[in-house]
Each structure stands twice: as C-alpha cells, then as structure tokens.
Amino acid sequence: MFQVTGEEDIDYGALCIYILVMLAIVIGLYIFLFVYTHFLKKGSRQHYCTYCGKLVDVESRCCHAPVEEYIFKKICSKCKKETTVMCKKCKKIIMD
Ligand SMILES: [Zn+2]
Ligand SMILES: [Zn+2]
Image (cartoon, rainbow, N blue to C red):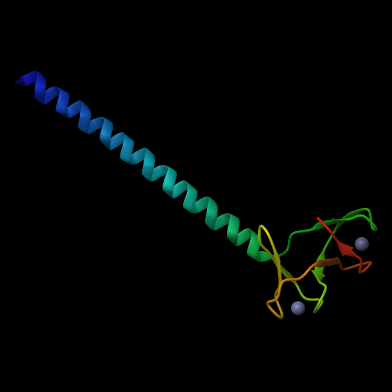
C-alpha cells in the first residue's frame, strides 16, 4: 500500500516535469516566432549588391518605398503588392 502511493508520487512528478518542459518549449517557440516575425516586418534588412560590392539599403522597385520582407516574398510597404528590391544607391535590382 505504501509502495503504491510512492510510485504514484513519482509518476505525478514525471508528469509535472513533462508538462513544464512542454510549456517551456511552447513559450520558447512563441517568443522565437514573435521576435522572428517582428524582425522580418521591420524591413530594414540589408542586401548584398553585386554592383556596389557591399551590403546596401534597399527599396521597392514599384514605389521606391521600404520593403516588408517575409520568408518567401517581399511586399512593398506603400502599395502592399509583391515586389522586388533594388539597391538604393545604384538602382539595380537585387536577386537573392
Ligand atoms: Zn548597388
Ligand atoms: Zn509599391
């Protein structure tokens, strides 16, 4: 009887640790995603321009406005359409 109670306590402890680990992973992922999307939405990422030969600031090809960059596409912050980025200095399109 005493042994059974002891085993139950150990099981509860393991379950608690399991839940805490899962919570920590979920919270960690949430924070990571928040920081990641926040960083991406800033649109201040620099690109390497092959013509200038260095990292440069970019602007959208359509409106010459800042670009909101996502993982698979780039959105012009002015007209909200998909766009390509170009070098602010030499006005050449940057492919990456
Ligand atoms: Zn350039
Ligand atoms: Zn635009």
